[in-house]
Every structure is written in C-alpha cells, then in structure tokens.
Length: 346
Image (cartoon, rainbow, N blue to C red; front, side):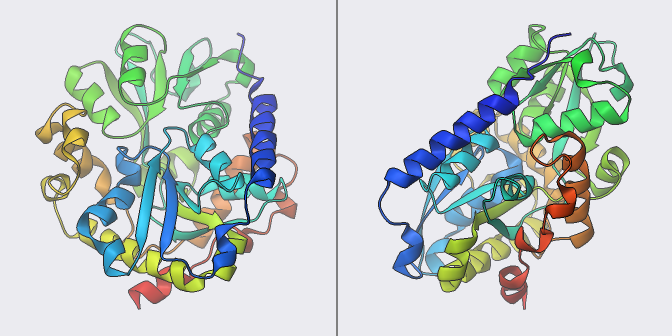
C-alpha cells in the first residue's frame, strides 16, 4: 500500500518557510513586556476539544483580566504550530505533543495551561469497513486531519501497536467536520480519527461506530497505555519568560473556564457558544450532546499530569520521525509549566 511518507519532507518545508517568514517580520511582541493584546491560533475553534478558548472569550473572562484576545481558527494543529514558529501569533491552542516535536528541532515551546490529559479523539469506523480492531487497519484507508498532525502520529502508534506497519495502510488527509463525514460516507476513508462534534454527527447519521474512545481516561489508558495530555495553550518559551503577567492572566481566565465546564451541562455550555457552531453541528440538541460526550476530558485545574507527559514522549519516540531515536535528549521540563495554572487555582 502506498502511504503518505512524503509527510516528513512536507513538514520540514513548511517549518522552514515559517522560520523564513519569522525572520522577515518585525521584532517579536514578546519584547513589548506583558502586553494586554494577545493573538492565539486555535486548531479548529468549533472543535469541542478546543472549546475552552472560545468559551473563555464568550464568558468575558479574558476581558475580566484586562486582556484583548484575538482568536484565529486553523483546522490543522500542524499548521497552527507553524504560525507560532513563524511569529504570526503569540500562542496556540492545540495538542501538547507539538512542544516535544519542536524541541527536537531546536525550538522551545511550552504548554502553560493544560486543558485535558486525554486526546479527546475517537477512531471511527465505517459500517461496512470490516474493522473490528486496530489489527484490521492493514489494507485500509485511514483518515487524519493532515500529515504531521497529532492524529497522524496517534494513528501510526495505534496501528503499529496492533502490528500494522505504515506501508500496509493508506493515510488520507480528511480534515474534520463536513470533509471528514463526506470522506467516510463516500468511501474516501474506511476509518479515521476525529473529535466532537464530528463524531456525534456521524453517530446520529448512522455512518459509523466508535472503535477506540480516547475522550475518557479509561479509554485513553486502554488505547495508549497511559494518559496522553493533549488540548492545551502553548507559547514560545521566550514569550512566557518575558511576559509572565500576561501569561498569568491568560491562565486565570482559562482555568476559570475549565471550572465552568466541569460544573455546567452540555446544553448550558452550548448556549454560551456562537450559534453557527450548533447549526454547523446538526442543530442545538446535537451540539449539546457532542459537548456532553466530550466535556469529561477537561481538567478542572489546567495542570499537566507528569506521567502523561512522559507517555506522550514514549508514543512520539516510536513513530514521529523527528522524535524517534531522540527521546533521551528531550527535556520534558521545558515543554510545559504548572506555574501559572497552579497560581490560578490557588
């Protein structure tokens, strides 16, 4: 089976382009000293796994901290990462594993608020795909958001753990939402990794079933052998060091939102979100159900689980070409901090 093995070359080219753009830009905002305006790119604003970003804005918690936060949406976490490296944004709401990947490339990026210690992802299989476990991935077309994304490496890990080599299946960049659903419905993919509200829509349409559920701690441990910290706010280490007051305000606002999520129903949360999120997710009831199905993934504190961070490194060291063979050189202590979230809850 042909695979998307050109992904490593593509990713390297994109990063190189990002660094070139960065060099051409004006001096970093980090030098301005605790700015009140912050730009954050989110790996899909309408994805439930990244819900805390938009919800914090809608609840007015950023404003309460004296911050003006500009949220931008980029469906692929890999592309959001590139925007941060290029200096186009101050922070990214995306998967924590990007901080490890970037450290192997000489870039210091740090998670400052950890939204979830599980991926919040599910592996969905088509009704007639003939897949009863990851052992059946060989010969199949597996959907991911994009090459080099967290869903890409998680798919590789799950397949490899079940004995399916990367050249035995095909990965397909299926995105999320409507594009993912269409790919599953039209046979473009046999299975794929996605999040809510996409997973909820597939369930309601009767197009597929959940094979692996990593929205819960139990399901994540079963699939990945431990916790897997994912959704987070990560920022350039230089920005964090130069702007601790701004970062603390961001943490204060986001941790307050995590507490809100843990004490409110999916319907109550959905009512705070933009109306187009519900209309694009099959309606208000479907969107609320999607939030209920996933909101248990969120921590109440925003604090990283250290063992989970180690498990992320273990997974990446097996299938991420940038991390493979370099696990011993990665300093996990530089990929996250609990300082700001701990102060926010204390």
